[in-house]
Length: 548
Image 1 (cartoon, rainbow, N blue to C red):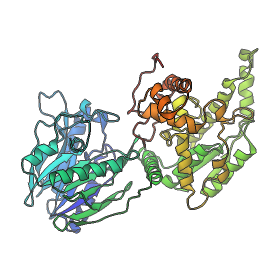
Image 2: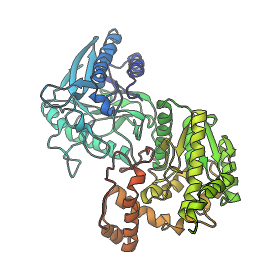
Image 3: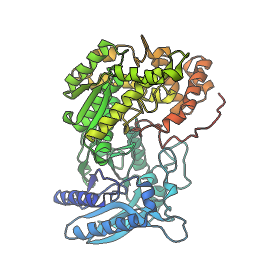
Image 4: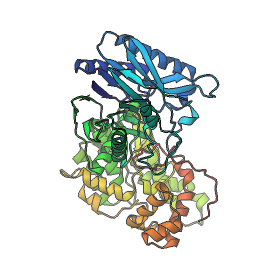
């Protein structure tokens, strides 16, 4: 049997566009001689559709779209498996099920629904879907296939030390006589996920002595980035076919001959993260109906990296850099912004805010009489810049990309309605030290981000001689603390012991994290590239009293 994997980038709710894409890839797969083509989980409607699933019209349109695909491919000598939404059975308490349809001869020949519904991190499928009570083998081309949907493959007792579910759908299906495992997925990316996924699927193949075929969605949907990286793995765990990461692809595999397309995937972690951020930025901007982006350029490394990502995502002609120097901006930073814009080939506009800052201070002078300047005046500068960026956004129909990193968002070293304004936090899941790593990666083939930007000490430049270390520990100390507390939920005592740092310092950092929740819940969506990002996958109340 020759199988094709159609690794597509659907748009949530765009049934017309998604159907057209599915038909195009099906025809290409048929032309390539495939007997069967697999599409990702919920490919018809896009994943995750969230509360759209509560709309009966959305479910109806999903079923109509599958019927359209079946009819349009009736004359092709190929069958297809597509993910879509079906109504739930009465009495389940849910409206819908997450399903896969085998389309053959112009009809829906078989339907399988998802059994394991993830409820951790960014996943909330138990809110919407009823689980399948039973799954069945699908017979095709003399094979008995165990057709599963994403999470159904993530509960192998031989791979995971701790399992989240009491049942393993693959094990049950293979016990019934399955001889090939098919999995359609929408599995989001984060650092290390591709390696874990590959090792898990290889372990399943070896355990069941059966080929494993997995097609994964690619593309960005809000905060989530899907890497694709679809795989065909032989019964001995050998990868015989793989699709590219972070772009659409169509690959073929001959299961009998154990041969297939092996498209290149990077093993460089920094390159993978960078490609993920480019893809996430491109899809967020374009799927929201825009084509252009605006970035406030400070001369610092954060805005430089965001601008570089934006250029690679949207094209240099679609990126506008805006420098807004204040009385405390150094000539070096202004020059670094100009050099960055020159290196990237983007338009740069300079709007000095000296006079605007002075007018704000003049207007507030009667109320502030007798009080010394403090963080208030610093934030006025940031909020003045935020107002200007949003004015340009409105006038030129372009999205503002925020430039804050995860370290700043963690401890609240950012200004509401100032540097936090914008539509997307491109590097909001990168701690500062990883921002430096990615910036050096960007410069691997020549200077794009000015070397001076990378080498100078980080500063917000909101008061004379200001440095980030005036308010925060050095990022080399701070970032490991934040990763341990935010991403792995370690206690201050555990962090201090394992990292050999002062417990009181850790507690101070933890207090900053907890006090800043109200800021994070007003922040732009963050592109997720770690196992625990700020956003829907990390849910904490705002009004709390945490004992540290």
